[in-house]
Amino acid sequence: MSITTEKAATATAEQAPTKVPETAVPARSGDATPAAPVRKGTLPRVAGFTGRVLLTVATRTVAVAALLALWEIAPRLGLVDRTFLPPFSEVAVAWWGLLTDGQLAQHAQASLVRSLSGFGLAVALAVPLGLLIGWYRPLADLLGPLLEVFRNTAALALLPVFVLLLGIGETSKISIVLYACTWPILLNTISAVRSVDPTLLRLARSMDLPAPKIFQKVILPASVPTVFTGIRLAGAVAILVLVAAEMVGAKAGLGYLVNSSQFNFAIPEMYAGIITISAIGVAFNQLLVALERRFTSWRTPTGN
Image (cartoon, rainbow, N blue to C red):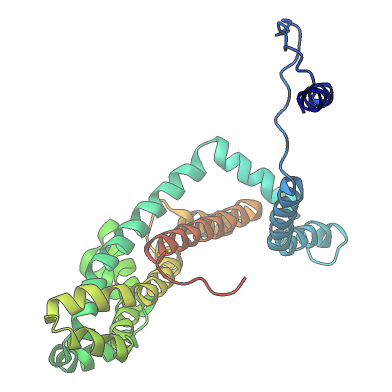
């Protein structure tokens, strides 16, 4: 019995692997650090994201690029009179000249100060007033007829009145912008308050919330998207109305630049001023869109 046990132990010892002690190999100074492994699927995701970004940029710029190419080619081929519509390259040279000699910055600064002042005052006035009119029915019944009269009166039709009452200085220009921007913001704010989901109001009242809390927790958040729609409309109106006002009685501003360039037959400079007005309008709208997304981040995104 002992002999059998010794043979079994000997066989087990022979089958067991012999452990060789590991010897640490010192790292040489010239050895490169091994690169971290790349996760599977990372490169395809990066490539797909880059492709989507490039596709989005191309989609949004192809129409503008085509317009600029047509603008450049049509006068050179004689399709239009280049005296009245010079090629885009000449307009770009004129724009750069206005920029380098400081005229463009001076006129743009004057227009921005006027338009932003009137626009800011309109937001500060129209948003609270619209919330009150939309929330309190007696106030809406009282001011409704007056609002209907003024909302249907064009701002430019009242420009001579503003000039007669306030003069041809900065006050009249800021006031006309304030008047023109007030109505899109005010009407959209009133509509926003009145179009809040009734189910939300019933749920809030079923929880015995007081009226100020309902206004703060339900009405205000639900009204933000529509209010920002009015603010964006007012942003576009601020630029358009100001340019028209500057063409009447101003010594500086983009509207004055366009008007004086036309009178002096400086056609490339005139188009340079028009392009600057368009660029400012687009940039201002994108800023308002970013602010809207910031204040409405709680909304569920729709679409792709």
